[in-house]
Length: 363
Image 1 (spheres, rainbow, N blue to C red):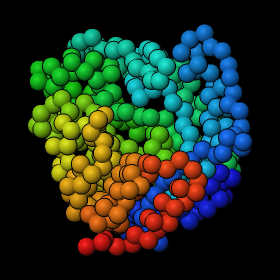
Image 2: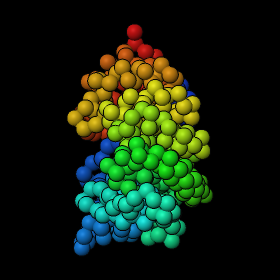
Image 3: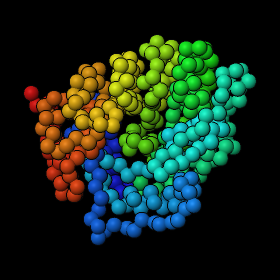
């Protein structure tokens, strides 16, 4: 039992049903609301000399995460999750890329300045690396604070093409896919070996703490959960995607028990059918991009995914749109990740009651 999610075992059964495109008693729905102001715990305040100092302050990070979770109510199937976050390119930092930090995100500096054999040989995972050790330090501190209270996930891991783009710089990697595809493929294969080992290190820590697998996207399963992705694919041809990167995606997926593919941006949508051909991809997280994220504009995409017997995440459905959603999609395999237009626990519970009555498609 989790203090912040007492019905976790029942919720876990709903997640397992969702992965299998079925339902236990209703579709999966995550609704999180802030507690009333008079019940909020004060957030820690601390002066830092720079954004970087704040991002790397383990004690401060863990205290803020713990209090923030305690200041929310996790209704439906929402989960109290935190994870060590040093930016989406931190996996590349394990190889020597230096990280820079702003107010809201971090990014890495390229270190692979050419594709010569000598330069490629220098791309090696360093377990003594500062960022490698810092992620583990934050993760261990979070696990200690979260035992019996909340879940701790693994850090935002981007391997494959996205790691290579961080090593090389995206524009340079674009030229490499045309001029030196063999080297690109070989490097991708090599870092995928490292990626799977790093993933297992994190998973073993989570499992040893009695927690289930999760990460920045707060869902879970009874085994190994992963979010494969390839944001770089938006910029390359179908042929380059297939020949250079699909094998790595398949390797990542086969290593896991459950996979939610992060399909990001309209230019990546052309790969949807190819991804649905991979049986180890169990669900799709479709991210249309800023300014294009109204769920109702993408009904055909969700229907395509459902027609292939895959689960799907739908973000931020307006409360008033719920009857329409019920009429165009099947409840099996749908995860409604947030309902907009509500702000109180009472409103959230009303939305949950409405969704709980959706157990079949309304023709």
